[in-house]
Length: 161
Image (cartoon, rainbow, N blue to C red; front, side, top):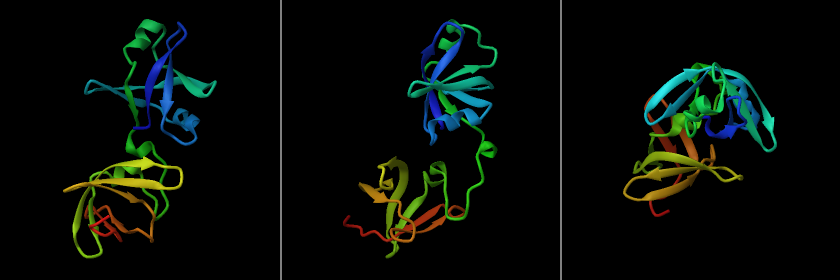
């Protein structure tokens, strides 16, 4: 997910967008969007968009009034994987890390990555197993290896933490 439709703007079909991209305006670099609501997904192009105050607004293709736009209120915004930029070695999209099995140096399985948190200092893996653990995503210090092919993330993290 790269954002969600958070509100309506005006009467001509514009929507307010809550962006997960950094900087937030980068969400407008992607089109079409996949809009998901109640388990149903629809592909729709972005006709135009801009910053508005501290947020983003966008007009979706073929949406001409507030009533048409209202059906997308609360929809999640996603894009196809091939629309995302290529990453350098050692960089990962959060979506790639979710679901990986987390194993420590001693070979003990700590659980699976459920989601990540952004703390400002560093990202944090939320690992759920026999209990929930918060593990900082610090490559080479805590995170020793990310093996996407084997769905394994190896960490230097004790079972007591």
